[in-house]
Length: 319
Image 1 (spheres, rainbow, N blue to C red):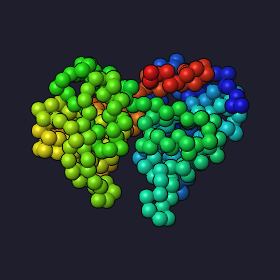
Image 2: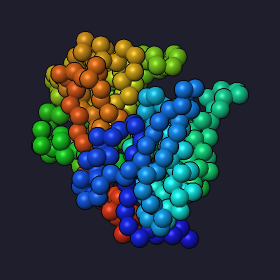
Image 3: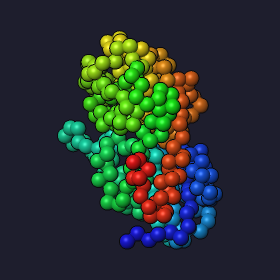
């Protein structure tokens, strides 16, 4: 049985200190005192500067760019906390890097998501709290409890306020067949029809739109995905919705704004009117755009942390 800590302490690495600070404010505890330094050869050094003996520790760290640095920070911090006799360690990962490497796409491919899960478990984490894994089955890669949060619970109220419930002029669109389940979560709450974009992907980070399943003519459409990386898929989908489907306006939303490579330029040049992201990954100044709007996940993660500490249901947050 995993021991229950006698108080909450929250620590963070360098990946998303603003989110960690916001969560601490809402929980009502100060951010844990830890130092992360680098030796001259690039090795990471971690010091936990306060006692964590017997406490319920939540370590907030998204494994976003630079992915490997942030992953190593988290692993070393978990090890330090475990060796300092923390009562229970929860790895809070708003964004789980390597999630797209969840299967063997061809011979001799690694399954890196499984390797990362094993590393987190071996380091000493007792449970994981994350949001919108790229593939839900990654929960099964862990041999410890995983609480899987839904970004739609933050995005849906935004669109409900913007367009209302059951608006006949709005259609929810899945950018590919794999996103239909995610789009349906929106349609159930917003009472909207769903359309699907059928596409083929000739190579990694390159997509080609084929056709649109469903009616979007003269409609305002909302594209929903779990992440935006290079934005090629999203921008091609938006262009097809306007040029082929005859859509009036295109909005887009995603939980994780990876926004690598030419993503910002593509979004700025696209027909998309507005892109709504969550702050699971911090948005640096050089990636900010008038088209981007960022919503905070601090409140929902705060509630999840409180429920984990109180040993009450996390899934009730999404019912």
